[in-house]
Length: 441
Image (cartoon, rainbow, N blue to C red; front, side):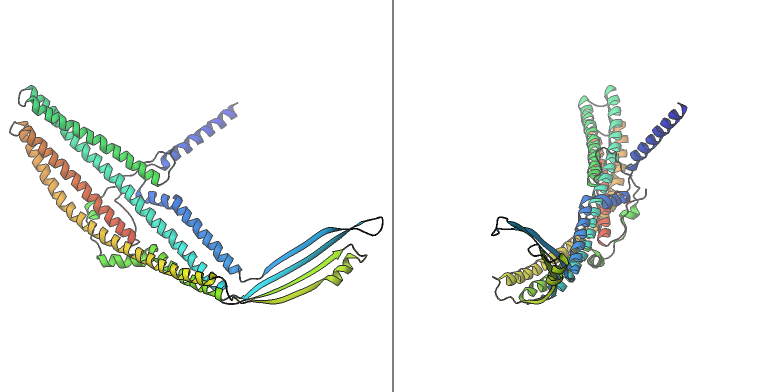
């Protein structure tokens, strides 16, 4: 009985430890953890990986097409024969054969198909990398949205704390007759509005965390939370490389460009494949076959010995008129080349627009952050002075609430500029294939 109790206790303890470990698995995740999890588990990434596996099979098939085909066949059955006597007879017949065939020449279609599939496999690899880049951008945006909303909550908490202190002081001032009931009502209204803003920002934070969790495709029964890093001004105001340097690096490293280039190359090879339909096809075939029947009294071995014989032949197929099949294939191949060239131009233009927009956004956000920080300092000093004068009756309620509103607005502008700068800089880093890191955990 004691052993059973000890064993049960050990199982329960291990289960509790495993559950506790699982509960902590998705807690306080950094940006790096979020990105790595997404790259390993995102279904869009996994789907692109299966596309590569399919391309690998196509390449293997095109390589195997150079080898001969070998097949075996047999045909067996009974024949009912109506004899001229009282008895009828069923005759057993069987034939056996093995054959092989090999294409010697088909206008280079085998060679070019193999080359095309090899290029498509490379393009599928770049497609995986391109999908991962998009996942990185999405996770970065969602993660920074969480950080932005978290800081907005902190800002609203500070404003509500100030507003709450104002409301409490105003109630005392109303009781001693320093302010009117109308003044108290204005302060109470602003207090209520700030309380609502705080609640709204907390709701936005929960929604942002949920959006990130769903983007990561984490199960509904798992608790998920995000680590909040410390972000310094050196990260926000980090100097940027030249815009053209960023663009040139992006053109060299972005998988979307490499994939577009490979798709053009594949389309050009596809044209050579289509042109092969105009060429004659030469194939070699050989076989060995034998037969057996019970219609005569010769033994199985003797029948096979006499009927067994090899065959060999060379076949040439010259296309003369194929109802425009080959010509249509070539024309469509040319159209496919043009479409892929347009796709390359689109990919190039997208990188150009992304680099230019993000670069300008980053510069603007850095400049605005400096000015917003300076403005916040003035707004804080102004509020402190007005609040002090309000407490001694030198400022009225409207002036106090105006100073509070200016302070709140300045704080919000600092937060907005901070995260606009961060996300623009980090998105530029993704374009340059640089490490993505936000703050210090």
